[in-house]
Length: 76
Image 1 (spheres, rainbow, N blue to C red):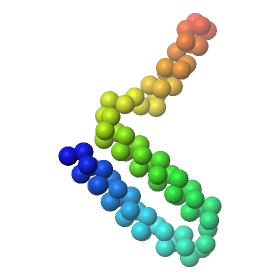
Image 2: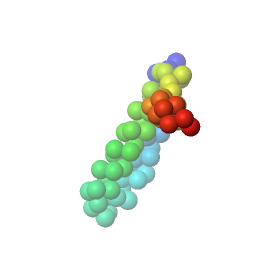
Image 3: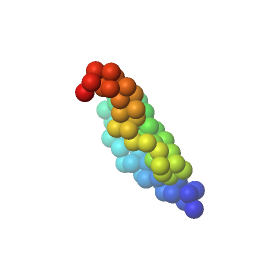
Image 4: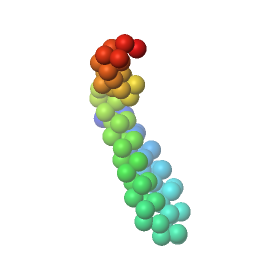
């Protein structure tokens, strides 16, 4: 069942790319293409990880984990 979710996420990412890529190809923007590719891949990986590990900590929990000892040390 999880494989179907991954296939759906991949399908949406491919549709987004098929829609956006021709617009970038006309202007020949290499940096924009690279940024789009990296951001899309990061989003795809995060979505797939959330499918397989739904209890994965969010960004605020990670920040709290690292800064909690500092706030205790400072007395905040």
